[in-house]
Length: 246
Image (tube, rainbow, N blue to C red):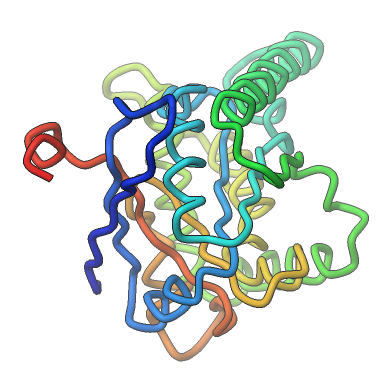
């Protein structure tokens, strides 16, 4: 991984916000980052990391380095996951709808608090009719059936995500794993080719931790992988002591 430390120096009403460090996964990802065309922030329902304050901080910070920013929040297969954990279909749908609406409100509040112009907020489901999204999603589903390295990484990511919902010592069931994989597969087009999906020259997808799929999509020369115009970076708050010393 190629580490690159970045921080904002802008004066805003949120001066107390933490600075962030950006760790592009590879030299190619770093080149995409340096272009500064576009940053994609993906937000999942139920993820407490993405408070409205954090979203506002990320937007203010990201605006220092990127000409445009999009936020895409996941709203597909959320009910399927609740159903796999034993919720009735009606209750699973109600719970999913509530979490998705809460997530959307939190994002909108963060965007308003940041006051950065031109930030687009869209639900993942809005892209389902798009032929580009459909083609990328088909590629993901095909790779799950033919590419063992990709499938193992995807299932490992799903198990890690689902494991947090299990009681200690519990195992992920086949139905739960299938729901988790479907949820991840719906998001993966934005790790493969955000530029075509959103009409930008290049794009960096970001998250606050490294993902098991990162080396598969951005670090190998065969199989399903991101296009050259697609980058990935871990973006996370600097520790308090680093912030104070900066």
